[in-house]
Image (tube, rainbow, N blue to C red):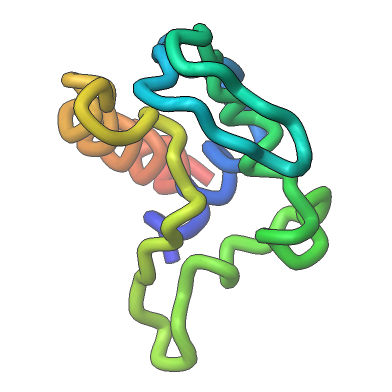
Length: 110
């Protein structure tokens, strides 16, 4: 449950709301808009994490959304606080370990 709570905090409060700019490798159409090849695209992580088409009740704090019926942690494809693909944050694993240790230590104090 601790990890699910940390993930939900990351989903609701984007430390970095925009990801690293990328360049469109080919012309594409997204929701009726044409994105020409070579266009610079800046992924909006905050928007992905608050999209009601992806997350049920996105404005409610629900750590259980990251747990299955047995209480096991599940990875949601749309959960991308550290970016994705080739340009994912290099410090992701270190940050996850530090977040867990700091949060768990803090909770022990209460």
